[in-house]
Image 1: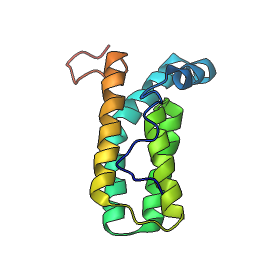
Image 2: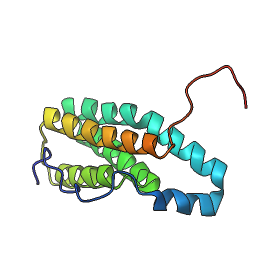
Image 3: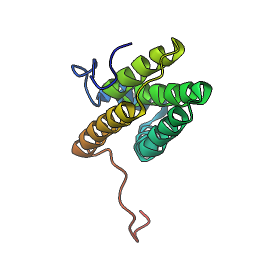
Length: 133
């Protein structure tokens, strides 16, 4: 398995709008916006679930969490994070026990890139406000 500290998907986009455009076309603007906002809010918890499962050396739980993050990342257009998860999934299926510290760093580095790009593109959910519009 490739060293999980390296990012073989570095040439991929952190956030590609094509996937979200497809969702908008299929389900509408409101559904696409709700999806990307929920995806972004759940990223830290999903990464933490992977790290906890790897720490416990629970391969089944690790794979479940990685596949969940990979799938939702693909739907959101987070191509680098999707690629990272695909590589991690492949290694876990081959019986590789990745270095938890390296995986943690890799996951959160990719998540920071996704959030930074989502913020730049205006995809972050609004902060809590008193308005109900």
